[in-house]
Each structure stands twice: as structure tokens, then as C-alpha cells.
Image 1: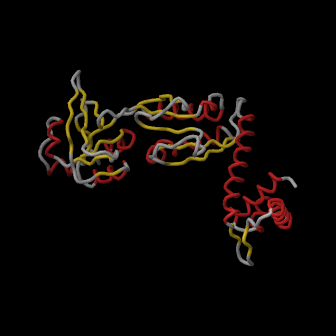
Image 2: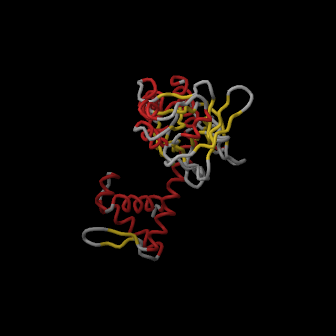
Image 3: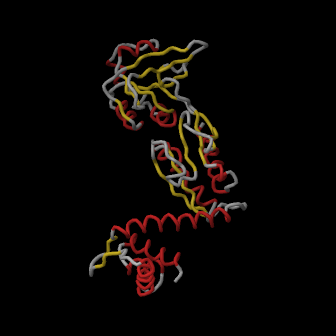
Length: 301
């Protein structure tokens, strides 16, 4: 028995939710799939799948074995890809994690260009505002905005910067006290990003001395687009990335405030970073994706 092939049959059967569906996906006879799964169970001396006329399900032993088998098959595929990924053209799957709105608004509109340019490249794009563990979550490259939490086991490289703009809707500004300098924010509703800490200060820099303003408001969120939409509805003043609100400002839906200042929430950086594991230094897949990101950022600057 080819154990790797039998593992693949098991994994495909579980994920396709049946022997026949797995056989169709693999383009083999259903009897071939069932025979190899049966042989795997005989070899292990335990039942991996509960079978009925309508469905299959994993036994407790099967669930544990399935997880390990899937990880082994992915590791084999990664090993093959590593060998094939040293040439001029990227080959295989690249697993990328990017912040939600950055992925939707900055990266997604250009993915067709990348995929057309490299026909043997596959992209598995995960949108998450959480800091991911590259190793345990099997991520090849992560894009982070602001200071990246890294250690000696991770390569971090800055590929660009963005600005944060204080913005509000014309309707909000028409109904509220005038804003002549940043300290006037103390009298306004500020829509703040939830960094998981308590009180928040916005830092305004114009010249040598930073100005810290302890902003407050009734709405906090860990999603930047929620704050953008709240600002559009006149709920208050938000501090958001330029790439997120540039079109709204250009078209008059939002107004940029204090344009003479550089603004940040506390000491958070405005760097755009890519993170990857050291063994991906020579990866063609990683290189072309980083080049792709730099190309996009140059166009949107």
C-alpha cells in the first residue's frame, strides 16, 4: 500500500464528504478510493470513518489521524514547492495574510494582474487584522501596517509608508464647534480604533514638538471601515489611513482636518511591513509578491 496515497484518499474523502465525490475530484474510480481507505484502516488496526448509506463521519481516532495526515500532505506539497520555487518563475501556492480593509481596497483590485503575469502561481489570501503566527498557521508572507511585532525567527522588511488623516463629514462639521487647532478635539466626538487598551491620545506633529491630544468618544471599533462609515454618517471625527478615505475626501463626502500635521494614534508607526520566515528568503513566490506590493504602493502614492 502507498501510504501517502492512502492518506490523500482519506483526506479527500473527508473534505468532499463522501467516497464518490472524492473519486470525482481525483478522477479515479470510487472503488479505488474505498479500497485505499479500507487498507489504511486495516494497516492502523482501527476504524477512521463511520459509514452510512447517506454520509461519512470521522471517528475520534479518525479525526486525530485526519489532522496529522493533512499536515503531512501539506508538508510534502510545500517541500516540492520549495524545490520548484528557486527559478525565474513562481510556482505553487503562496499563503498570504493581510489586514482586512487593506486587502479589500489596496490589494484585491490588482490581483488579476499578478495572476495573469504568473500563470503557475496560486494565491491563498487570508484577511485578518490579527497578528498571525507564520509558522503555526502556515503563512508564507504577512503584511502588517504599523510597527510589526517580530523576533529573530521572522524577517521583517518595510516596503512603504502611509499617512493617517483626521477626517469628518461636512454635515458633522457644520453642526459642531469650530476646529481651529488639534486641542479643539477635546470638545468633539472622536471615533477611535480599538487597540485593546484604554484611553487614547492622537499625536499631532508639526515642527519639533509633538502635541498629544487625549481624544474621547462614544464609538470604538477594531475595524477601520466601521469608523469610516460612522464618520460618513456624521457620528464624529476619525483618524484613518489615507488609502482608506482618499476617495471620500476627493469627492467631498469627507473633509480632511489639520492637513499641516502628521497624525498618529500614540506612537504607532505608519510603516507598511512584510514579514516572512528566514527559509523563504530565496522564494521566488515571496519575491514576486513583494515586488507586486511595491508596484501597487508606488501607483497609489
